[in-house]
Amino acid sequence: MSKWVPTSEKRKFIRWFLNQYRFKKAEVKKLFEYLLSHDQLLERVHFTDKVHPSNRTIVISTVCSETVPFEYRRNAKVTMSPDEAFQDLRNHTKERIYIVLHFRGKPFSHQYSAVREQFKPEIREEEQEPPILLQILAEIYLDHQVQEHRLAELDKEIDRCLETGDKDLFLRLTEERKRLLSLSS
Image (cartoon, rainbow, N blue to C red):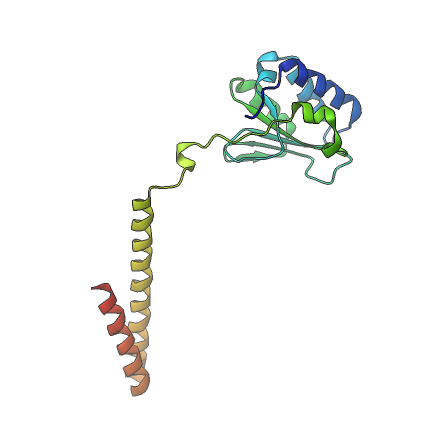
């Protein structure tokens, strides 16, 4: 996080936002009111402009924007239901909540700028790049599988040449097969 935003500022912003805008989904107001009444949750709210799949993120749009009305992401699960998000917020009060807002005048809103946070999402171990050795082994395995598949195709084509008596194609295919086999040894 680049800056810490006090809960009082978040509360002030949410109240301002509720008074200024209408939501595409009416249930969003209930969700904001719930956040306002629970300091423990409000402390974990972070207004941001970026969605990251591994973080719990709520995307909310007002009626004056042309984006998705509502989206809630938690791990790999995505829902468009504010009620499901509400239940999840109530059941998981210790996790951070990132809120992405879409509304008219957002780039010029000093109220929003006061609470917006730039953040580098937390990268979980399973999302980090695999070790280089693992990448190399995966490439070797895939190359081997491609070669095996091509050899099987060549064998079928060579058999067809023997059946049809196509000597020229037979010689080219057997030469290609020899070349592939020499690469693998």
